[in-house]
Structure formats: C-alpha cells, structure tokens
Picture 1: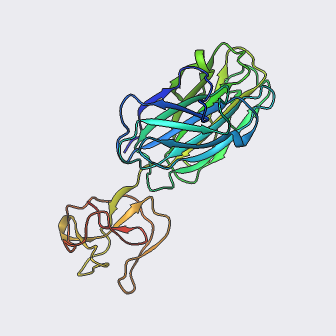
Picture 2: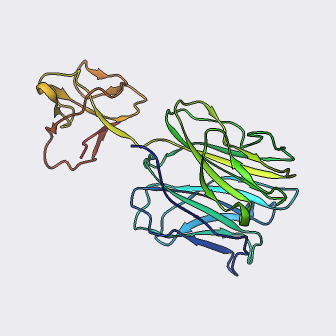
Picture 3: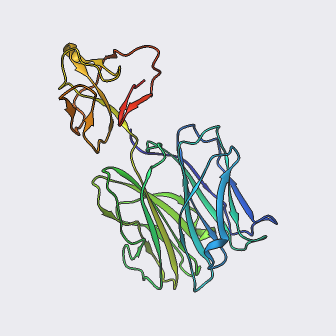
Length: 301
C-alpha cells in the first residue's frame, strides 16, 4: 500500500495558549480508523519542559519524538505522532507547561499506508542551525538512519528568527503543509526506497540566523504474503492455507526479520519476500481473522 497524505492543517498563526496552557487545531474531517497522525508544534521559550504532551478529542495516545530548542530567539520546535487511531478524532490539542504560553503554532497531518502496529516511527531527529545560509538544501535535520526499506520520511523546518522571506522543500521532497507566511514553518515528505541515512532538507531564499528542523521516518504498512515452498499435510497451529495448484501455504508478516518456526518438525521458514498470493484459507472457523498464532504468523482476513 502506497503512502497517502489524507489531510493536513495548521493553526494559521502564532498564538498564545489558553489559560490552561492548551492550543488546539482541528482537521477538516475526522481521522479514519487505523490511520496515523503526525505533527509538529512551536512554543515561545527555549525550555524543553514547556512542551508537555499531546491529546485528541477521542482519547488516543500520542508520543513526543523530539524537542529542538531555539536558544537565540527563545522559540522551540517539537514533533509528535500517534498510530492506529480509533473513534474518529478530529481535534488535536498540544498541552504546554504554562498558562498563556506565547508563540505557539501547530501543524498536523493524517497518513495512510504506514505501519500501525505501535512501532511505525523507525527513526527520528532534528537540530538547530545558526545562519545555515541560502544554498540548496542548506537547512537540514541532520541524518537519521532507517533500518527498513520504503519508509515515509516527513520533515519540517521553521525560521524562528522570522527573517527569511520563504522556505522551499528539499531536493526530492514534496510539500505537505505550507503556511510560511503566518507561522514561518513548512512540512514535506518523500519515500526512501532503501534503508539507511536520510535527512529532511530545505532551502531558504534569504538568510535567517536561527532555523529549527525535525524529521520522522515511518515504516510502510505490513503486507500479508504466502509461501509456496511447504507442501503436504502440514499445519502450523491451524494456519495452513491452500494456494495455487493445491500447495499448502503459510502466512507471515512482511517484511520478515527472523526465521520462523512453524511448528512442523524439521521445517523452518527463513525470511523471504513476496512470491505468491493465496486463494483461500484452511483454518478452523473459530479462529478470527488477524489472530496472531506465533511470531509473525497470523490468520489473515
């Protein structure tokens, strides 16, 4: 499944948090169950503890990835994410550490096609740069290192000095959210075909003395696959499947990372890539779809 930026929005302007230290922004429509949300926020100090937590209107849990502190202009950047959202949330709230926290802004994005097992974020990071200049890709998060092919690389950068007239996406990236005119911050994305070092980069048209940037890499959604190399009357805990030409097949989550003992004496399935899709299952009807019967062995819908 390809990645898709379902929707995105930003707070529209720098604003003070309310008397409880909260600032909220709402998507245009509710988030689809099973999708992930990613976001970035700013606040008007160089104190990490001022970015406390994130929540939504339906009780989903959010994780803070990074806090990048802008010590020159007392303006900082944070990143956060949530996976496999439920109950159709619409409003995301950032909780700050003091009443009426100044200089606050938020960008949020909804994504489909990503892993939603609870470990989607494969790598993340960011940095503060002083006077990075206007050469191509001079604004950079610094490299993070992914260990899964095909990650969704999402980054943001903000001119917290507010002196640059524009900020453009980096080489190979596509714009996600752009309200630079109001919050001096944009976000971008690209797919990293092969795992390894990667950075989110940006280009400024005029100089700024302080730029903050952050990046998160999300793994692709798990794809169900089958194996046609195990034949005969074997069953692995009731996960046997009949594939093309009557061959027995077994399911495994992709991408595999470890050899899998399927419970049949002297037979172990080593990591493999997609070979053939199955036609129907041969497992007890009492076992519901998506039940995990062992390490990376599932009954699939």
